[in-house]
Length: 279
Image (cartoon, rainbow, N blue to C red; front, side):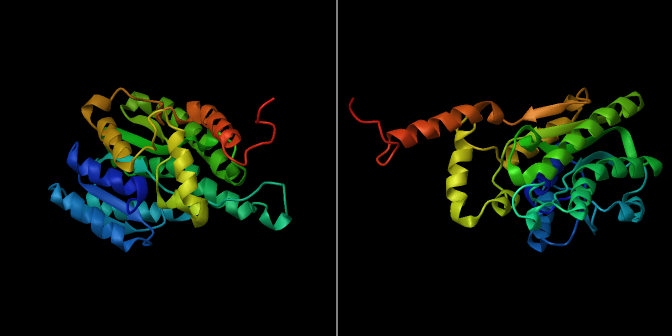
């Protein structure tokens, strides 16, 4: 598990311990010790083992050494599913507004290394060390950012588009060997990452609007995402390959309707646009 102490990575680690009943090895940067304790307790309560490696799995220059450590810890043909859940990105504008807000080449490189390129590099590292079990699954966690235009998330959107391209090509290359490569694109979930993007003073409003973007009337939950990963990891999910799986609950399809509803409600409320009275 590349990124396992918070958010989707933590939820998925717990879920996989229950179904299909896997032991977990989690790589993390050491920023969430409380997450380590919580995930460890949940995995052990499911009767499985968990081992941790403090490492920055998104830095290309460190991956070979980290993979050697993983090999020494769990041995060959031991990885049933690799879940790429690395979140280490920069936000910023490309070329508008004050120049000091423009994204820097180093920020672009870091974002692409963590959010896209490392998926390929870890796949290569596991293959070189014969660490993939027969029928292993390689899963990239994805989201709908690259289908929208939110100004300061342009580089993240571009990295997710690259990640999806890598998934398709790796599925083509590794399919004949029995490996399955997919991306799971889930809708907006309430998380530390989302709260980091939006200022605290507007969070309640942002959450309320996001809830309305879904036909079901609420955001995804991390547990729902994790439960579906368990399906992909189990025998029933074997035929999924080269798929960008839409697990957004129709979020992007409902965005325009949500916008229209907000505009209509604003026009109808006291203080709405002038001209709404009797003719």
